[in-house]
Length: 294
Image 1 (tube, rainbow, N blue to C red):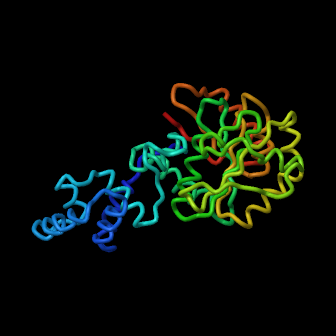
Image 2 (image 1 turned 90 degrees about the horizontal axis):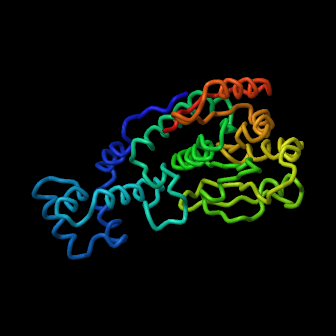
């Protein structure tokens, strides 16, 4: 499954704004400190004179930028995003930091394909893996989690890469307890961290570095965990250790039932990918698709 550019979501937001009331955009811009009270009358006058939307008039007067308008629309339509700077989350979260980029559009196209091809008929869980650590599985899992949360879906992202975890860094979660501690019965109950401003997105970090990752993932408790969270979440995404590093991904794939494979242009090689596909299929899981990242 290759991700391709889809119709711009920004255009949809702007078009929808005509039916929601442009004056609300002005209120949001003023609340964000982008417009002063005395600016509002100037904008209203130009809006009436040239028959513009409020945001267009404010931008034409040089009072706000296109980015300011996008941010206001995101708040108006409850579409959580992040400013490009000044946030604690990683810039790797393209879907949140740069949601109108071509890369984000390609990820949204992938999201649509997954909804049609995988997350149907009661399926809720999907593993994301790769052959090598530098092929982008963690990046892909994190961004898909954000994208599904932006739809209002209740999402749980599990970092099952117990050897080289990345999600705690991407989401700035710190080095607390997580999956390994839960499976080792060092944490009595499931404890996830909600990611702001994505109120429907929760992350279960990898937890304490264990000496026995494969053995922990092979425990029945891992299967029980997945069955349990499927009753509470709409989408469960699992980041896995790269195949080149360990066989942990097979244990995760078998529990999830399907794996999405991340590859990278000019990095990934066909022979290792074919071997990875064979190993996933051997577990009884389905290779849902392969995504080529630049």
